Length: 319
Length: 306
Image 1: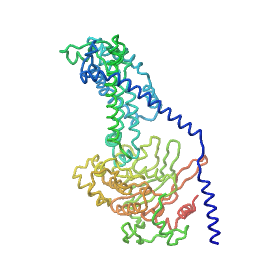
Image 2: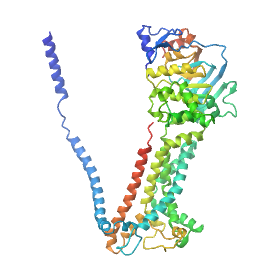
Image 3: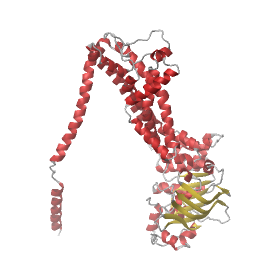
Image 4: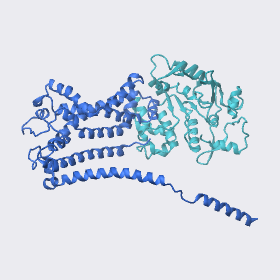
């Protein structure tokens, strides 16, 4: 009896083992996987070639001049030309983005998410904002040229450039990133669970108290991350600046120029410097200075992204 | 569904399923710490208790959807009133009329009379924010603010303009919610570090910190394990001394254990397939569970609903 049970148990075990063991041959799966790896590797290859090419081109400049390159102004002489003017211009533009786009964008997002009634107009506005975020930046350049430059000139801030200055550029760039600020902030606000709002109302808070004390603090990390990333966008944009008359050649502000004169005078930005150097007749500009300027630009952009990632991890909320 | 400790105990004791479960007052049961204590029991309904929230012919609509129909329900002071019934019968909807939480849903419309101490809660010039300071609420899922334990308690009093010593109030409130000993050394830590049951007791503490008159509880233990559930029930029973409590629950044993009166809701399916909640029966908990008037109630409490 026992032996028979053992024998049948063994037979069952053997049958189960043969059913469970063995590998399926799947040539399709192997090929598919190799294909995916190839795709990924081609991306990495592009990245490596790109960075390698730039770093090799930039190396002599940094080796010979070090930080002098970063802190020197524009010059027609490749030996002394630097990107400092561009860094200052880009920082000024970023400052305008911080002053205009971020408060207006966050405010609009709060209204859209918390106050706007759910009707056709709201849905239309929402769609419009999303479409605006997808509009090519050159279009914002035209907007800046035909409106902001004219306005800046009309209110007496035209200066020596007739409005084609960093003020108009900053406002244009703020308009360009505004939809992105609205979308990222709105998403951060929407991610705050409804139960938190309910809890606030439940203890007798007004709508304003719920938004101020619970929704905004909870959405803050997301809003912060989003807005920092839009700064990176504003830093890297080139096309709209070319349209609204950024200086692509050599200029220098006199040493005793006032802040207003500097703001209303000619300006340039870091990516614009890359553009204009790549078109110079002296090949030294294209071969060594432009890559070096790109390295500076990328360093700034990566630092901004790193700050965004830090904020996200530092303040991330778990629900 | 959360299984309840006492379900198991009842089954083990051989109570035949389907029999109305008689509840003796003062029945002994085991508490969390293992010592025997008197279990909460709902048998203290006293018709001389004054009505605190008077509901008459209440109808609630969400847009075109008729959610609750013709509910008449006098809630009495210092009693625990349980609202039971199947899903979708409108018990939470009714509960949310008592502190105007339904106002937050744009399409919601409330008709009928909801009077609090004789004042129409939906009357002109009544501010829902003020209503919620008098009628506190505890939600189904523990939802502490993502802040410290201290800030969770102090937020309500602060916005209500509380001027005295906040530390004292926080301590006193946490004592009332039977949470003080567990959290006294970590008041400044995140409320999210607490267990689910502790979080829910913190939410109860938060609700009573503003010293409301009425406490609404929307299935406060449905997301908790049996031990945490028992502690919530003991707390609810304890709080009855100071507050009038209305509790929605899916758990009939819970209603039988803690409440003084029970309202049984059910669903009426209209000609167009529209499902509208209605009140079937409202009486003393002991009576509703042992000798209900309506056949529908009896079918539900004995498990023959459908």
